[in-house]
Length: 169
Image (tube, rainbow, N blue to C red; front, top):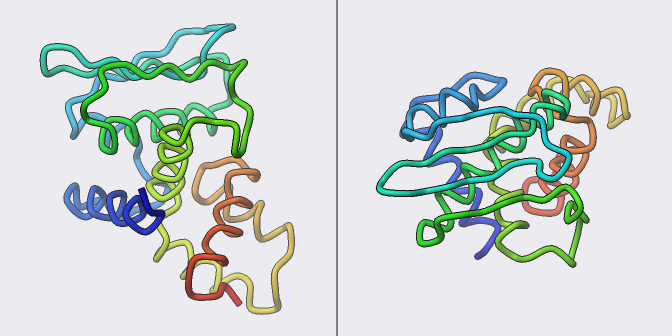
């Protein structure tokens, strides 16, 4: 699945739900899709998506930081939208190795989550507004706080957007 298609799917979902505010109200997105979100502590998983009889549940590890929980919900929504034929996904903490070793479906769900939580057009607008004198790590921190994501997630998103299309600077 091409990155552009994943970006478009996230943008279409936000448009369809008429969500234009930051940070993305991710639990509202789940509610609008009739997905129940439940939290519980777990040493084993970060998140999971279960579908059965037309109903869906996202489980989130309540022991993780709030920004991680938001990303997990967005990631599982990504599975819900991008992989409609599979009924169960579990994101085990041990398997949270980043990069090429992860299954393609997991990387796609991460891309979708990033696009949902940090919508391209809004993020580029905000980046340009505050980065008039060039990029600094402080900009990453400011944007991460504004979008309610981790600094690491924001850094990856900015790097990916810069390699995708309109240059940030």
